[in-house]
Length: 341
Image (cartoon, one colour):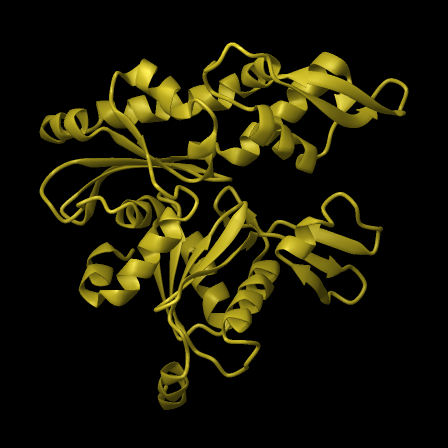
């Protein structure tokens, strides 16, 4: 215990947004220092970690049989404990310039509705990777703090955090969650929807990386312009087995994304139905704040505005909200005690 305290003096306290798609690291006094994909590449024979983050993501779908690329976070929770530990150790050492014997205090953002077993897994992974003390904070609460919402006041604040694996919806008042709902729909399910649509319509199989690129370039939740946008996509023809190229347009991509977008809308409507009337009045005035990578899907704010008739505000830095919010509670131990799980 005494050694941990001594090591803590020389360590940088950290906040980590352990996301399905990306992991962001905030360091006290320095801001966000790391934003890399949550991917680990390992040797099947030796179990040795070959690459983490951006370098590992480049290997997705391109590795030989003796190299395995793992996405250790699935639907917002740990699916591979060892790989998550290796990934966290890599990020902690990188922040401390590869020095060993560092024992930072760590705050980690996790989805709402996470089970006790899943909470324990996240804590154990962080402690085994070099953490001195580990605190968990719900992602929508961290996102609300990161966007600057006045969560300490007795008024309703509604935030929708659309991440890679989950969409977290929360109504927050007086430093507490009044209502929360997490659904396992996010960026990954959108990529999956694009893959399935192209497979069904064109008998063409595309990879995850191509699906993500299509979603970013052509994806939208609502038709915003009159110009037709197209993109050349490449994949394998499921009939002939030969590589093939075809032209896809934005209307087709929007059609493919209709189901996951509708699921997010239904979850928001359910949250609004379960919100106390006094707080509902506040949400009518303030609107709903969108955070996470899904907030960047073109026309998402317009689609939700049309369907709910409420003001929709996209956070200033949607991808960084959770990490920034978790980082801010590092500086204020009183707030941390109020909001930690």
